Image (cartoon, rainbow, N blue to C red; front, top):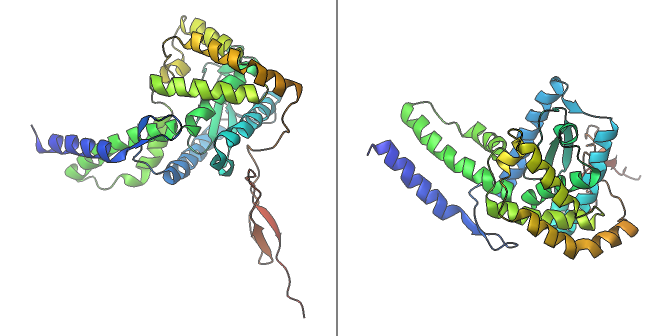
Length: 307
């Protein structure tokens, strides 16, 4: 066996052993070689680059009724996500609608960077309740550290790339690898365990936000039927666990009372996504820490000295 290949195997084993941790919510062991702070910061950088490129192609939909509806749905879901995982209130949540009618997909990066493709409407004819199930499912992947887990898988693979690059004299590729890992992570297939976990949490978020849990069943039924006619991007990264429909029906029945209560008395709306950032410029300004759950930077005049 060649020395470089042996080195790759040894590094992969060492990374796997050193990076495993137990998720406090699910109790499942996950590969976590990427620190959460790094996963969030590099996901934000990759997301900004991705949306910047799509904006230049005029593929980011803004100012439409559809984009406003997605923001409204997402805000309601995040309000429940913050109750599930309080530290997520400090994430800089963003959601964008990508104008690509042929693509049925959605994602949520580490730290709450989200997007949904217009194929959800054009191909799937998704209702608001079904869209809430999609976004709730994606948000749950981030809440349960599934996106960081997939970034860790991608990053662990990149360790091998670095070794090969060093052996070939290419140099250090680490600067770009973390952003690459964030992009690769949203295209990697989830495990069946991850899917089952996101199903269980996502349908809860949606029900408590006032969206019909039965829509989770109709959503996956639509996806299955559409997939029969060709490849669907969403199902390539979200493989269907066994008995998914039966499980979702079971979850939905248990959440019916919570859904009806939220529908009768809707939770107070709060803005979480796409909040503006105020740039600090003048010497007579100071930044005031925003309240929990608010992501905008509040700038007020600095107090003047009294004579």
